Image 1 (tube, rainbow, N blue to C red):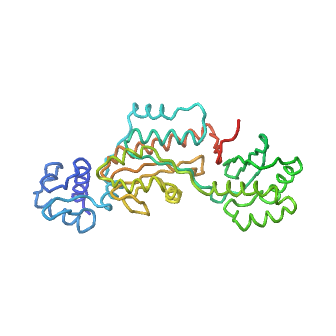
Image 2: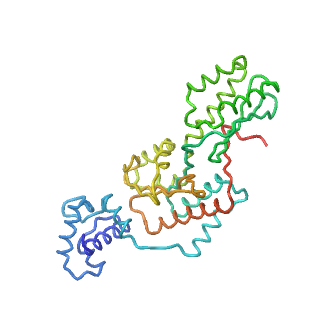
Image 3: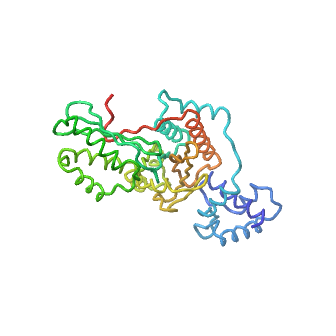
Length: 347
């Protein structure tokens, strides 16, 4: 496409984002500095429609951008903007925390993004692909109460409180810890299938009856590692919009963990999807996500779900700044990642 058609497409997207109304050639002629007639602009808009970048919702109406048109706009035509120092200071203040853990930092970021963009912010921790178990331990914490601890090679920690119907002896606890070290140390987290766990239970011999509840807890911890934790904030921001289907947003909220694979998929830089693109479930919407990294390791994603008519040139810098800030804080402070299991670990 020539520069004139690109300018026309950019003008249509900008005007439609602002007004929500189909854009005509006369409007474009008044908006941009192109020394051609409205008829020539109208012909160019017909070409853009044929190429799939614009569509005409009604006969004799103006044009509106298609998903393809939005993508080209974001990739090549969107005006470059940066956050002011005041906006950066505001975001920095919203990330301040007393306990510098990864989870707390990401929670702050997703809440800040929802508040400042008036959209639904989303974040997830990445499931630890290719990580192996480095330690499984059981710690008595009270009468018939034990904490299972699992650590992986990726530095992730999960724990789970197990309440048994009986107290375990020192001999039983020692056997369990030694058995876990011998059989699970160096084993890939994703390989702990139900069949493998059944074989381990049988291998316990006379200890099987008393220690199977702990073994079941180990399996639950492994499952937890394989499921990314998806956080949403600002759901009400989109539930109140006329251009977003309420039932689709409710379905997304109820089944948010199904987005974990979409968030966890490998991609470079910022990823933008629209409507049902890529398995997304909310029509007439935009989905913008950026990676979160700790050093060279991807630890999660941060982004937002917004309407299709979104001020992308303003919103995207917020996402990029928050993602970069999180990456910087985790790299500088070596922020630990500590996640609780089904119950909080007793103090």
